[in-house]
Image (cartoon, rainbow, N blue to C red; front, side, top):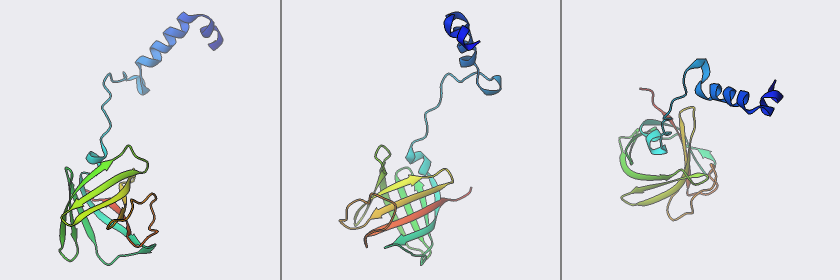
Length: 151
């Protein structure tokens, strides 16, 4: 039957028109498919630190929460200390890059967002080069895995 459709263009055209006009369950395909959210939009909200690693060793000395609003971070640790940070991301790079700008300088890093609700950053402190992978090979690299807080 498919060979006959390929030889005669009208049955094939009619078949493709029917398939193209319907989606699963017979519902019409939307004409305007909404654009996917940007990474900055996906980062909005509250996060809790799951793990932190430096020089390959896990550090669990402080619990940290992160509130993201717009391009601003507010980090709060369990001792009550806070830090306000401006951030920018570039999701077109591979791996995706992130820069944190705060009163004493800037940290360059990479990040990834996972569908399970985790956000992973690997950041270089001081004048160190931006990390290229999600592990802490050098003293001045910090890997943090964040989990989105449930509303």
